Length: 390
Image (cartoon, rainbow, N blue to C red; front, top):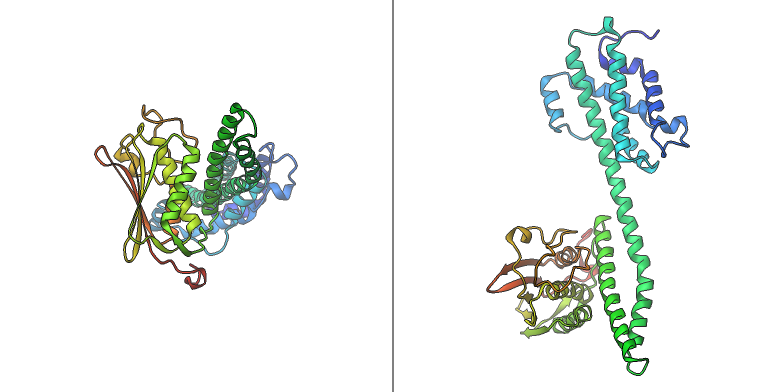
């Protein structure tokens, strides 16, 4: 028979093998992920976590330490903990988040049941022992879940990035086919109409794929790269108006330019921003009222405003309009059609503007319409002039 222990932390160390056997038995029921896992894989980091829990319990024997732990005020240890490694391995093995929680719930039950069955050996302050154990186990659970969630999100974002990249080829073929069918003399009137529809669909899907790729880059920790060069903002506004018109051919888009609008910035990225804003404006514009894109140059900055006179955006939505995967309600009678976007366009626009060290804001009222305003420095640092690590 195993020796008794004066407190729960000692009990965990002395009875670690028995606890791990029960851990392994329960983990084996986590199907289908555990179907072909070995004993070592099922026990993954169990011994290290039990040792860490025991040590953690001994460190939190004062009321102040217990309170700090319950509020998450315990400083994080350096390096990767056994619990964090366990969360990563369970994700790699195909466990679900619910199954990871179930593991820790089973361990809690096993340890307390085994300890409480040793009635003669229990210390007088066994309630405090249980509190310390729960605190240490919850800390390990939080570390495992955080790591599991990180790897889960990273896998999802990597999948989206690969999907977006692989869709570019078929979309390019679709766009070429639409352009060919739209040529006069190639086919019938019906062929021309079909070609125009294919071209519009290709333009819409290309914008969605570009937004998806940029979103995946941001979620995977990458910065939006810039290639600043001397460019004319007037030409970019015209190009963006053309791109938005391909998606919404019935929209009236007017371009206004005042002052010197040349500068050094990433013209392709800025065109992506303006196209996103114009597509958004055309989607919500009212009837035959034009969407206006106005560019203005000042000595130090370039300012662009995109205005539409569709439905007023409620103040509550203005606060989250640049958040990813957020879309406005689709029940407006003035909305031309249901959205075909992913709810990423405005988020990507904001990220590109920020990469230019600029600002973007939106205002919406019945008198002035909805106005998206962008301001960026006229001159951007060339890539080799950027600060290290920036």
